[in-house]
Length: 239
Image 1: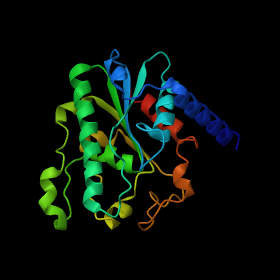
Image 2: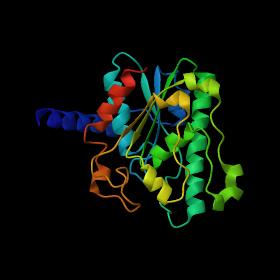
Image 3: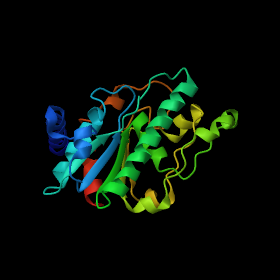
Image 4: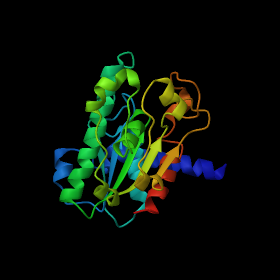
């Protein structure tokens, strides 16, 4: 119990520090800054507050910084809509595709401009799908959407795998959830699999294998329940 309370307290402090400006985000000024030792590219959840990183991303970036003293850590919020238009599947697919392309573009940019920067990918909920698809092993749309395969972002060039050191997914929709909505499964390419970790609050119906449906209250806890610290510790062992 004491450990749980301590984790909640530290997570809340991380989120407070991030929300009050301690975290650099993907603004032009941040992009113009010198290359960081570590950059966290994070995709927020569906219409999550505090764009572009979202509350979970803010907490995670600050937690990563807390685990890497003496090293520069910046956060880049993927500038995608994080749409809630679930009733329009094609429109929703476009927002996810937009996020995937922008995530991949940022990885490519860093590889070219800041080759020594260690890249961490992260995402929450819909953003976890974006982050997972960004390092996919090949996306195949369901047969009814085959005409749109030309819009699917290709895999990242294999040479960029060395730049991405860790992938941390919070509240990622389960395989059953993804299948129920008719989306391609999130298959991380082989070079990234050992660098990928998923966090799911027990009972979170988005990620625990429940049938497709709306989120419950447990799905909102990732920014304050200590899991962003656990994710940051995973990152610290790999960068």
